[in-house]
Image 1 (cartoon, rainbow, N blue to C red):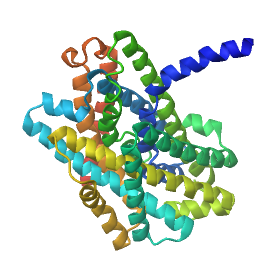
Image 2 (image 1 turned 180 degrees about the vertical axis):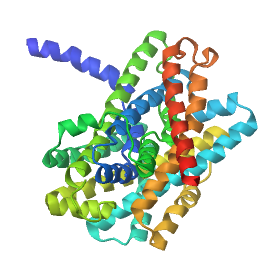
Image 3 (image 1 turned 45 degrees about the horizontal axis):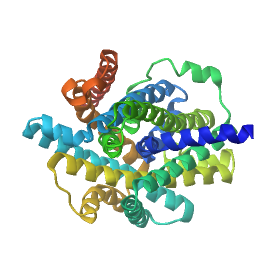
Length: 413
């Protein structure tokens, strides 16, 4: 009886807080998308544990950024794109929209190529056909969202779980070097190539489109959080949701780099600078089960992130210009660069890495308006950022901009 008496309050508490959880898991799938596979595995295979600190720093920044985005939607009942249209001059708002659409194309490039490559590794499906299949699955996921946001959040969260389990399994089998991991926590680079990968990791981890999307996912809960007491509880749950979901995505990213560093760095095994080579290398160094876990995780990542990316594109257009276009038309436009890459036979991994570099240049254009809006009392009222929060977020934005400028200068020179 005592057990039953204790169980009832616990069930009530879970039922009370459960509705606030879920949005961060949709956002988190973008932090474990195929672009992360390319940059993290390439970074680990090429430089060992050197770039561990980049993944950790990027994940901490992601937690802060996504928490601000979630708070903005939950408190105001509007998403970041809508608030930009309301508070910024029209030319600036339209410019941000055009930039966001270009970033959406780079996002689709990573997601479609990743899904197509996974289908090729698992079933031998030609890459262009795999790209079309990935797009079709994205439409199916959006149909799930149309039937209920909670269903969509559950499906995407489940796919994130598949990715996490796949890499934890392989990482445990690969082993690790705690001393080398600890040394990798000290910020350092090893030439321009490591800087390029660091910027790619940053672009793959802090994703522009989910900065917009997270606020749209939480704004649907704003009415339920209108009461001040309920709002405080909702904000606490939102922070916990972000911490758990982004923590899981961070573990995925670290596992990727550790696996590549442990098995391939300095090993002399060829081809580990490509995802096909990583797949083959896992099969030869470990066994077919490890290679299968990698391919399944890549497929779950490509399919889930493709659906999330398409939904984010709709949110961005609706927010910035107050209009939408048919999903089929949007998908045809944003998938075009990825299909061109696949049809031309370009190296998928190289395309993925460069797509993440492009994404990193798009981050400040979403991050700066987010910081500016969340520090305004006329927008967030008593939930306005604490000055320390604003300073930390501004420092993250400055670091991203500095890395991008340095990369651009090095590339041009």
